Image 1 (cartoon, rainbow, N blue to C red):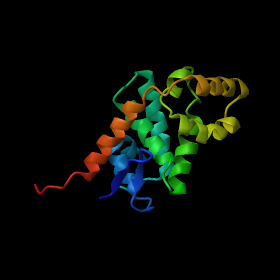
Image 2: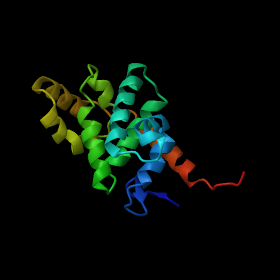
Image 3: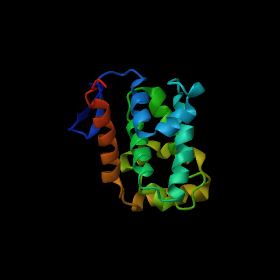
Image 4: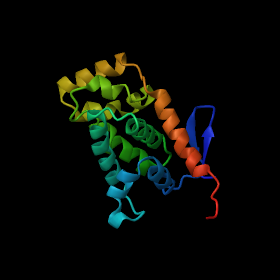
Length: 171
């Protein structure tokens, strides 16, 4: 079994700290982004290139309110943020969360998808990256906007984990 749920803190626990594990989950949850970021469409995919693709996708998904893709994107980003491997959590922070508000006029809508724990973890990136006016709007939203999509994100992650843990049957 590659993944298991740690029921105590509702986070995906890793049976080991090997980085390639993220690729399996990415291929299940965000296959188009993984493929686009992969070198010659192989399984060699940099964490930073992948999150650059994810950032582009989340902007598209928000523009059309894609309730199929948004939970997958935010669930994977948060899962990555808590991954024990620095290469993955750092990529999630600097290639995704840091730029979450670069092109967004609708800060409240984006903030509703970001877990409070993740907001706290990446707020320093926003402090360094955003202009003062945008930063103030983001800080207000972080304090006032409820994380209204927790269930959708949890379901997206659990579905992907179940897919990965499903027994392989011979064809």
